[in-house]
Amino acid sequence: MREGDWKLIRTFKPVRNVKPGESADILTLVNLAEEHPETINHLDQHSVIAARLKELHQHWVANVMPAR
Image (cartoon, rainbow, N blue to C red; front, side, top):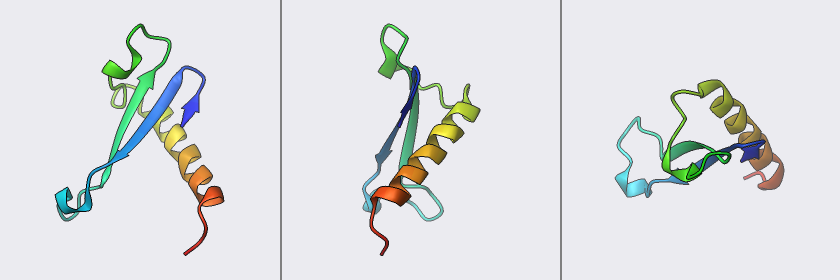
C-alpha cells in the first residue's frame, strides 16, 4: 500500500513457521524519498503512518477479495 512517499510492504511467513499467538504478517514501512528506501524499516518510528496504511490495505482487501 502506498501513500505519498510512504510504502507499507506486507509479507507473510509460511504458516508452518508461525508460532501460536504470532502473526503471519511481516510489515515494513519505507520512505520512497530516501536514497535507498527499502533498506530501512520505519515502522516503529512512524507507527501512525503505518497504522493508516494498514487500514487502507485492509479496506482494499475487503473490497477486492470475494467473501468466503
